[in-house]
Image (cartoon, rainbow, N blue to C red; front, top):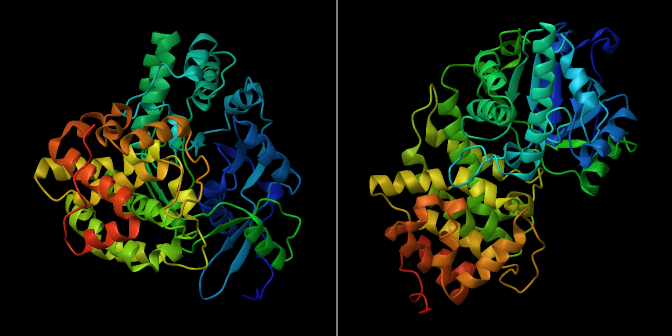
Length: 491
C-alpha cells in the first residue's frame, strides 16, 4: 500500500504543555490509546496542563526511554485502516523519567503537586495476583522486597506508595491511580494492591491509602500489534525511518471510565470517552467477548502453524470455533450493557480480528496464558457450569492451550517459550498427554473449576482428541457436533 500523505504533526505548541499525569508502562497500547486521546484534546486547545511524563520500572522501559527521548518524546502512531493507512506524531508526552533500580526519580516526580493522576499499563502480571484466588499475592519476591524496603521499591506499586507517603507528609493531596490494563475490576484490583502492599509494612498508612486514594475502574480497547521490521518499514514509508519504536493500531478505539478523580481530570468526554457507573458491564463484555475470543483463536492457529490473526480468521475451522463458542458458551453469560447489542458487538469484533492490515500475530495472542486464561476464559466456563449450560467449546479452548504448552505444533515445529511459567507449563502439559487431569489440577489457574466432573470429562476428551487426531480433525468434529476421540488412556 502506498502512503499518500505525510504524518500529521501535533497541532499545538508543545512548549506550553505542563505535566499532570505520570504514566508507568510506555508500551504500544498506551501510546496508541491514552496518549492519542490527550493529543486530540490538546489539538482542541484543551488539557494543556495534563501532559504525560513517561515512566517505567523494568530494564525494557529504559530502552524505550532512550528511543523516545531521542525524538523529543514524540510517538509515531499509524492507523491500519484497510481503506488507507494514516500516520500521526503524538505529542502529549513531554518527558520520560529516568528508570532506576530504586525508582528514586519516579518517586520524586510523583511527589510533585502538579501530578494529579498516575496511570498504569503494566500488563496483567504486574498486579501480583494469585490466579486461583484472584487476590493480591503478598508472597511474590518483589512484593516481599518492597514490604521490607518501602523507601527503595522495585515495583510500580511500591513506588506509588512511596510517593503517596511523601505527599501525605508534605500535606499534598493524593493523586488518582488509574489502571488502563485488561483486568476485571481493574480499579478495585489496583486499590487492593496498594492497600495490601502498604499493610505489609505500615497498617496505619494502608488505612490512609484506602480512605484517600481514588482508583477508578476503566475499560480500554484498541488492538496494537507488537513493533517489528514490518512496522518500522511502514514508518519509513511515511518518512520516519529514524523512529525505532513506531506504533501500529486498528482504527477502532474505546475507553470507558468511572468519573472518580478528586484532583481533577482532562475533559476526555469531548474526545469520545464514555463516563459511566456501569464500567463493570462494558468491561465484562470486552474481556469475555474480545479477549476471550482472542484466546479462543490463538492456540488452534498456532498449532496449525498459522502466523497471523487474520489468517486464522480466514480458516473456516478456527472462525467456526470462535462463532460457536462465542454464541453458545460466552455471550449467553454476559450481562446486559447500556445501549449495546451483544451480538452486534461480537460481529464488530469478528471484523476487527479479520483486518488483514493489522497483521497481529497468533504468538502474541498466545503469550502469558497462565495469566490470561483465568481472566478471559475461566469466568465464562464457571458461569456455564453453574447454569448447566454447554461447556464443550470452552473445554476445547482450554485443551488447545494445554496442547500448545507441550512445545510443538501439529507439524512438529518447535514452539519457543511463550509464558513466564513456560517450564512448568510444558512439564505439566506433557504429563497431561497420558493423564489429562494433571493439567486442570493446577489450582493456581483453575481453582475449584478443575474439580468439576463435567469440565474434567470434557477437557479430557478434547485433549485426548487433539493428541490422537490433531487440531483440524478435532475442530471439525466439534463443529459438526460429534463426540470427541477415544477416552483417555488409563494412568
